[in-house]
Length: 237
Image (cartoon, rainbow, N blue to C red):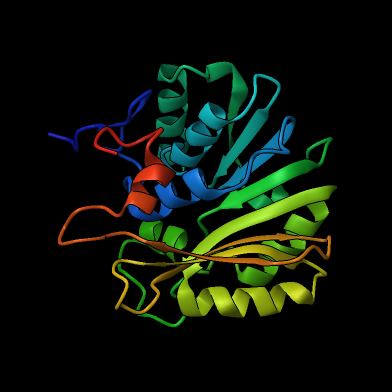
């Protein structure tokens, strides 16, 4: 029996055949990214189950259109099924293609991705998981170079990475004239070290906003901050 679908307030995510299951990283990015100035084209790189694309469909206006890319056939099929079952099937197109070979006729106001990382760690034996979880098929340089190619003049790139990799990514982005507009360090508890870094970059030199997100408040209860961030999605938020 496959893994049960993950139920959110307004949609569910089947995840029995896709490479990566619903996790905190994807939900964080989908809930955190700023969509206030995004009424047109959005690109989700490495969509997997389609989770982030569907979250952004929920958060954006009826005019928004989302392209979701993946290089795994099973992930693309599962994402398509999840999109069709969602309340917003007309807003999302799921495409089987690598970012490097993707040449649309337009540019994007927002690009989001939960990208490959753990570059220096041991590679898992499963080739599909390796491609999705390690920077073998999509390096940070490739991501940034193609993001610059595909972003509109006002466009933003939003990513979530392990904290140390995130700091390195911000420095590397300067080479491509992308500057951090927002950064949020994510930690499970206030006394723990930061585990993830959420980053929004753009070609504009606006003042950077530095924030922090803490998962747990007292005991095993979610913090009020995390609850507010995810309240439109998680059933218990």
